[in-house]
Image 1: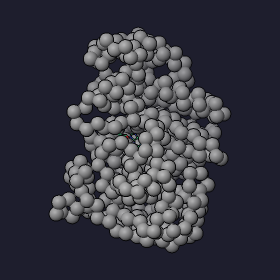
Image 2: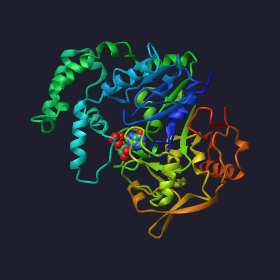
Image 3: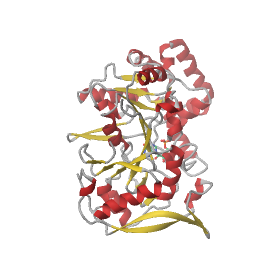
Image 4: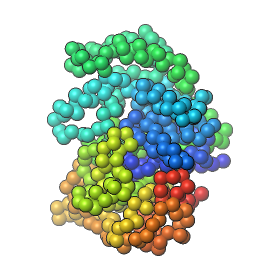
Length: 426
Ligand code: IMP
């Protein structure tokens, strides 16, 4: 019986979870996604074919494996349909392999319209979201006025609930000539998807428990990163869901003992897309160089990512809040040409020295990083598959990270392709 692993991003998303999930999904029977929506962009490269998945768990690329979308996800049914069509175009058959929880809230066109208005008019700083309607959909969920997958099967109730949106979202919808405000149209478009959803709707919690009891292996797939968690991240510069381990429990309806190992994905440096504090950001040529070498542009929005050094201070927090057991370090090869590599090992806040994140994570906007400088290895590690074959200085860099965080390194990614991987723990 394989291990049931949970994969969480340890930074601000874009750590390379797509590839790690893809590798680990090969060893699992089921991959289950527990939060977020089409704001995610998981890139997987198989035999020179690139797949970017937003909603569907990356495990779908493996034929015969089951994928589940849990109630913690917010699902844009139209984006979902497009993604399914794309899979079919690529010759991937998802029939009987995709479970969708009936309790999953839907992201509907009016959520995107609301987000567009709100992002412009926000009193505080613009949050620089992905504009996929994620925040407004989670607002509706928490306010208990969302529309869920199960509502599609009850047309009268669906109609009533949509009409109620007009009442509560009056200031956005009434008088708008934007087609996203057209609830009648949304209703008809949703009804067209009834048969599609009927083939997939499953009590995900029950099905996962049953699979667990039968000894099947489950991989739990998170989206975004721990520092974007609504409760434990850099609020308000966060996404609207729990991206951390706890999100898997509530987002799928599973018990804590169903998770054997939490695998944290850590990029060998740090990136952030969108606004918010970033202590180790490099706003100079070096930052530009990392962006170029790492091809750091958003998979969902194409936005350039902000780049900087690895930050062990917030990673200590992230390891703790997720209960990370092992880490997968990605994009090591991006650092190949650097003569010296800095790692943030502490912060200065005024005249205080901190080894942990400040009480208020918003203060990350005011801390000054304290760096430890390590020598670069100045040689090409791309495609290395054996830890011992890495230059000693690259090994030292990786061990420095693992020792500080008190975790084991499960694997190291040395390129985008599946085979460009060093597997350390099996
Ligand atoms: P939202 O999730 O679209 O509401 O965006 C909130 C914040 O999270 C913004 O700063 C986004 O750039 C960021 N974000 C959301 N999803 C991702 C992701 O998958 N990768 C990286 N950043 C993300």
